[in-house]
Image 1 (cartoon, rainbow, N blue to C red):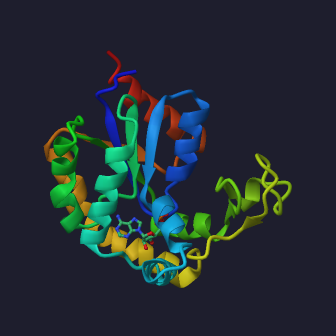
Image 2 (spheres, rainbow, N blue to C red):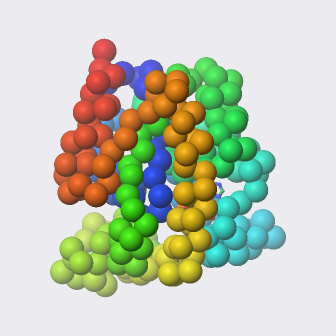
Length: 220
Ligand code: AMP
C-alpha cells in the first residue's frame, strides 16, 4: 500500500465514518487513525475547566474553537506513526480549519491528504444516529436494528449506550453546521484533484468496496 497516501475521511454525522474505519481495519489496511471526535471525547472526560467546556460544547452539537482544534490536530499528527497511511477523521470542519489543513501536513513533511467524502441525506443521518449505540469500553459503534443483543458489545462485552450528543436537537444542529461548510471544503479538494465521493446511501459493503477502490488506486 502506498505510504504516501493520507486521507481525510469526511461526512456528516451518521455518514458511517467510524463504521468504515473499523471495516478498513478488519480488511487489513495498515493505517494510523486520528479521530478528532475521539480525542475530544477523551479530553471532555478530564476533570478540568477545558474538559468541562469541551463537554458542554459537544453535548449541544456545537463546534469547538478553530484555534484550539488546529493545535490538537497538529499535536496528534506530530505523534502519529507516519510510515502508515494516516486517516484523519473530523477535520477540517470549518473554513478556518480548511485554510491551515495542507500547511499542517506540509510542515510535518506528510503527503497532502486526499478527501474521501461519504455523502448521505439529513433524513438518513437522523435515522442512523437515533439508532446508534456505542460501547462504553472499546467505543465500537453499532446500529441498533442489526443487533440481537442491544445491551452488550459483541466485541468486548462492554455496556452499550447512546452517545450523549445523539439527541434529536444536537443531531440536527450538527448536520446543519456541517451543511454550511461542505460546499467550500468539497470545492477546495475537488479543484486540487484530491476529492473522492462515496454514495453513503449504498449498502455498507458496497461503500466499503468503493473506499477500497480509491485506496487501491494509490498502490505503487
Ligand atoms: P464527531 O464524533 O466527529 O461527530 O464529533 C463530535 C463533536 O466533537 C462535534 O459535534 C463537535 O462538538 C466536536 N468536534 C469534532 N470535530 C470538530 C472540529 N473539527 N471542529 C470543531 N469541533 C469538532
